[in-house]
Structure formats: C-alpha cells, structure tokens
Length: 318
Image (cartoon, rainbow, N blue to C red):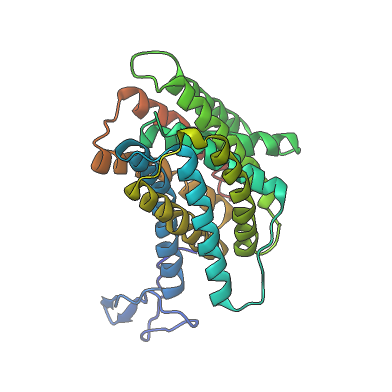
C-alpha cells in the first residue's frame, strides 16, 4: 500500500479506516484534496530514514575518530561495543517487558569480528569507499548463502549478481585511485562477518534482547583484543566521544529504530532501502571529512548498488 492513498466519492468526503489518508472529495465538478497524512505509514518512513542515517553515521564516526583523533582502533572497538551494550540494556529496562539480554557466543564472535575489522579498515579507507565495500560484501555473503540453501535466481538476478561482483572487483583493482588493499580486505572481512551475524539473527527471538546480549558478549572479545594490543593503545577524549556515540546511538539506538520500522516494510523494500547507506556515507564523507568522489568509486557504486537492486527487487506480479 502506498504511503499516500486517495478515496473517491460522488457524494462527499469518505473516511476509511482508523488512519488519516489523502481523501479526494467531489462536489459537482470540483475536487478537493485536503492533505490528510497516513500517520502509521509516515511513522515507518521516518523511522526508516533515521535508521539509515544512523547506519551511515557509523562509518563517518569511525573514520572521524581514526583520522582526526589519536584513539587506536582496538580501543575504539571496545568502547563502541560496550557503549552499545549499555544503551541496549537501558532500553530493555525502560520497556519493562520482562525480557533480559539473550544472544549466544557464536553470534557475538561474528559481531566482534565485524566491529574490529570495521575499525581497523577505517584507518586507511575513506568513509564512502568503506561503506560501499561493507555493504556489497554483506549482500554478497547473504546472497551466496541463499543460493547454497536452494534459492533460485532468474536471468535478471544473475545479471545483477555479476554486475555487483564486477563492481567490487573494479573498486579494489590495483591503480592510482584504488583503495589500500589492506583496508579493503579488512572491510570485506567485516562484511562477511556482518552477513553471518545477520543470517544467524533470523528468527533468534526478540531483536533488542538478542542484540543486547550479543553486544555484551562481543565486548569480552574486544577487551581481549585491547589487552593484546595494550602496548599500542591510546585514548583520546574526542575519540572516546566518537566511539560512545557510534556504539550507543548509531549502533544501539539505530538497531532498535530499524527493528521498529521493519514490521511495516516488505522484505524487498527493507533490503532495497539499505542501498542508501553507502550513498549517505559518501555524502557525509564529502561534507564532514573533505573526502573526494573518484570516477572509480562512482562507477563501482553504480555497478554494485544497481546490481544488488536487480537481485533483491521482486518483479511485480501481474
């Protein structure tokens, strides 16, 4: 159902349902269309927009911290994960649903591997390039898992998959404008880990309690990493603030917002709308980090995002 719909009447205005919608009223030859907005749908749109901004902000906050402050990547990861765990725990308490933190150690390990590789990758990668690599690898991981489980692709979807993979190869192929190979491999690893985490999370229970438990457990792995790299650790006040905002707001609250929007979205719409995250991250990188958009990044973005769109967008039924 579209966000705005119109109802027709030859005798006057017609109200339908419990939610306000666009209503087209006919009086003789005149048509009046007072702007009644479907509040339930508008709520979903706003929540979805906020979630996408939050996800893109993770790339910007991490890049800001590791580029403009002296905090190290391991400490950033540790603070981000524990901040997210605290935020999610507080949300569980305020909801008063009786649910406690859930999750499991395997999913927590995947979450930690994503967060750690993500942080270390952004030591060298621009925000937009990193977000594109992450998103493309996540979608590729989940797509290949679906194929392995017996999902069938049509010709359009195979073409889209080939285009997306070609875009990823073109993005990291050696050349003057290629991203650092070490950072690119780390971000690809982060994408695979996040894809695994997402696949394991399907049907795992209440999303907020499961995510809260996994954040707490992943903090244990992050603490071990920080201890192993203690010799190179460095805490910077601004970097700590960026890590807290990334963990508590962009990650913790961002996931809760996204899970609140998901029931109002079709699966294909939910997947498609995430195509905006690399674009938002790239725009943020230009505005806040003075990063530039190269021709290679632009063409790779078109191939990757367009290809993924062909894979995940359903063909309308006739």
